[in-house]
Amino acid sequence: MTRGGLHHVELRTADLDTASAAWAWLLGSLGYEPFQQWPDGRSWRLGDLYVVLESAPLDGAHDRRRPGLSHLAFHAGDAADVEQLWTDAPTHGWTRLYEDRHPFAGGPGHRAAFLEDAERFKIELVAG
Image (cartoon, rainbow, N blue to C red):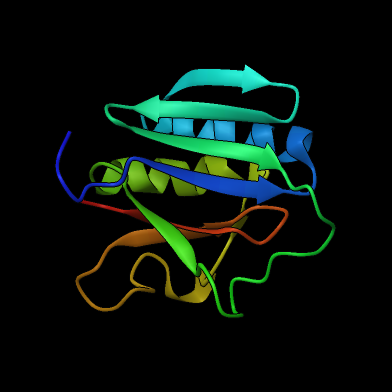
């Protein structure tokens, strides 16, 4: 455990089954292992950090462009790893963002893939 490091991230979803399939693929591809499962949620763990996906208790839509969380960014391996994730993502419930600027949508010299799920949660997969 590193002081100041993230302990966990918890995301609320309107459709747990759909979101779980997309997130299980993504997190599994990044080395996370299934950690916990209960009727209204799932979690995956990598080292000391775990990611929770849970059914939202209230109705409403997520909008990453409003005040709140914009996106999560993950170290995703080397350039080839990021390209493979980019290639495979659409068949696992993820939409590619900024295709016209891929893989440098984050700026010159910053190689990354940007994706969003069905509820518009945005992910940045950064190449090392």
